[in-house]
Image 1 (cartoon, rainbow, N blue to C red):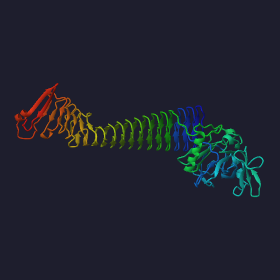
Image 2: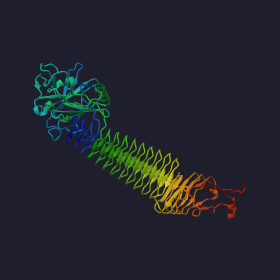
Image 3: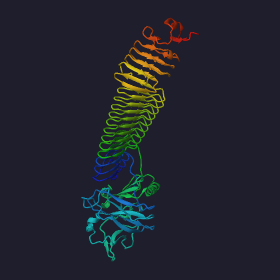
Image 4: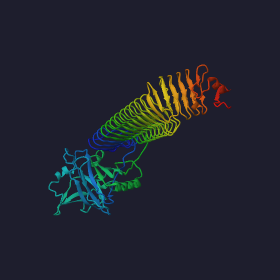
Length: 595
């Protein structure tokens, strides 16, 4: 089915349809069958409904009008019956074309190209016939409109032993340049019988459109180079009928090589015009910017938003959604879906079941929702939320915000300065090469910082916490027991906390509450926060220069009681040296007493 330059309403059939909206803001429904629906230019609304459908918001299918198609190589060319929508019992056949354009070796593929239950014996998508063609043969296809019914099922004709010929009015062999040649059956004894009534040719277009009795186009084709096929749709009514080109539909399996050669031929000949079923133009794929809405419906659907800011709804079934360029919104719906934002700043919702979400390029937002999902932000500064279920969340490159939600989740920050929040249950959080912040939340979590200057942040909790980087452990009533690896900094909350650093350079912020902070070695920056805080130093710690940012004399304490040795308090105090400048006080210790 092919639309117009206006706003079209195209409704598919119970069979497998190929629909192209072309221009305008179109409304298209595939209905039953495995449909391929192309919105074309304009802001289109597409529904796949039942069947395993492919929906493309922008552009159009690779529509071609084949003439005599030359076969290269020894590929076994075959034809598959795809369906019908008309009440006619059409006859489908093919022929070969000589170098001078003469039509010869005419054969019926299916004298009655009709479905089981509709007057025929063919099965949609399964009935297949192989053609007797060799490398170098040029072939074309035709139907005889309602041929099986109008010729009484070809009773009395020996189709197996007789021959079929297209003849001109003077009895000569027809060529591609003939005007309305008629089809005859020639019996072994030479008896000629006219095949009623109108044959319509795939090769009848442009200068050869005179092959058809009404001198207009009756076929179009969808070329798929990746599959090595061309799907042919016929209009079987004189003067074109509704020109939906789906009265009889067949797919020719001609192989990858032949499909690529055919595509190159049309690219070279036509270069990118839109289809015009009136004059037999030869279009190729065209992509433009459009904001489309695509609904997958039931079945395992494939939706492509392509250009523009699109909305894609997979609905039921295991769907594959591709946003394309633009800022797209993708909804997987029920079923285990695969969502790809592609370029642009996209928003992806997995829905129920176990989904695979990929933001790809751009600053994307990914929401796994229910199910055990895999979410990958890709490049850009992404926001990724696993939702319910045991999810795997990958930030990719960029400064990402990752949230596990409910379930036992695995979070991987990747490159960039990321924020990782495990959520409920027992989660695994892995940073990357840059400076990451980890929010352990509830559950017994594994937090692995990586190579950057990484921070654990428990500032959301007002309970008493024990956070010891040196011992690789954090524990508290609401956070569970977390394992900390390669973490450099601590931000705590409102409880009375015990905080301990490492031998490296740490930044420790106690938050509110009466905290006890021990930094160990290194050049550390310590903030007690609100409350009466105690900063503990032992002999092992007296290496490096520590800074306390908010020490309040009379409220906060310096604890040197654990310094090693037999020196009494007066001896220790005598070896402390104090220097004040610009409101800051620097304490140093001459531990050996030798100046």
